[in-house]
Image (cartoon, rainbow, N blue to C red; front, side, top):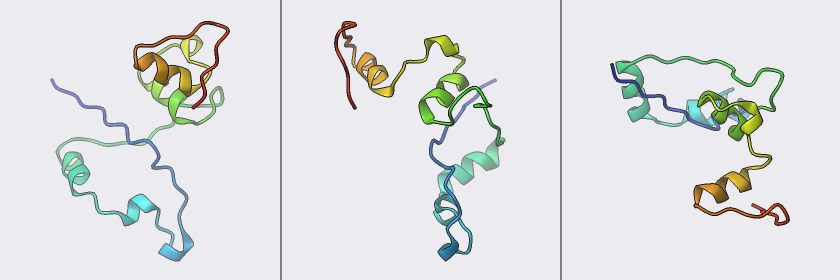
Length: 95
């Protein structure tokens, strides 16, 4: 069985009154996503709970099964590691 988990970050926009209560995603055209959904399944769920701030990094890491104690303190450090670089405990990374 093949599976694809597609995480589209940032779709939690508020409805815009000038658009008759639609969100930017509701208003946008997305034929390729619609095609994927028609051939599979879809759902909504909350993975952050009360123990996490609902932000991209922590929620995506939880989706991937990374234990909370391994979450980086900030996203800049994670992006540095993704580039194959590291820093000492006396250096700082800003994003």
